[in-house]
Length: 310
Ligand code: GLV
Ligand code: GLV
Image (cartoon, rainbow, N blue to C red; front, side):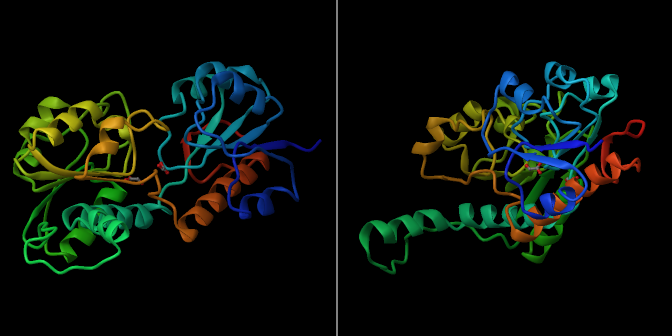
């Protein structure tokens, strides 16, 4: 009997190339914010699946198809998966760590530079006026040289950002899981958030944390939107307490707080941290390889919920 692998989105072709010779592969179009009912229907024939970070893999969903033995989440973050339920139901869950670290750290630097040097405002000015006028006092930002970068979450990605920031002459302070972030908040010119979304990190940057930040500081988020209370962030930007924010992720994706859309001192991009040819292909390869290994009775290489083999 051939196993069925469901791809809940359109991943780089390498995923199919690895899986199709050995298994029946069903691919669905990429869709945002599916409901539980939708994802239950999509997964109804699956023995294993490669899933999108927006797919809600709740207890209901995981329990709905008794044949489902394995989920390879196409992301390093797996806050969309109820890992407790997966463990109890005997479903193996994997993620795609490591291969997107550089891409995400690069985008973090791109956002940090874009917000502190007002790149998007400048781009907008030229498109609007059709002219490039040099003015001594126009679009002034700050230099990264000599500034302090506070990294909340010194895992793989946080550490890769630290390495890049040091090359720009920044002094880096980091906080690891479980450590107080108060000092980091109070002394940093730029804060960058790199923690997984868990119960503990939800709104780790709330109104109180924002108020502790240095006046005129910037904040960058390429991890998960709900780490920041988005409304409180808008308040801190509106009041001028923060000078700018650069965001790749949002509290209620795919929705973006309309207040952010109106602000000039924010740079906003649509969750593209890992969006390089290299990273996305490598993510597809390791997700598919782990499905392949699992369905062939070998332990997957990137388990977040290890389980007995298929
Ligand atoms: C993307 O956000 C990921 O977690 O890989
Ligand atoms: C993610 O890969 C992290 O550990 O930062």
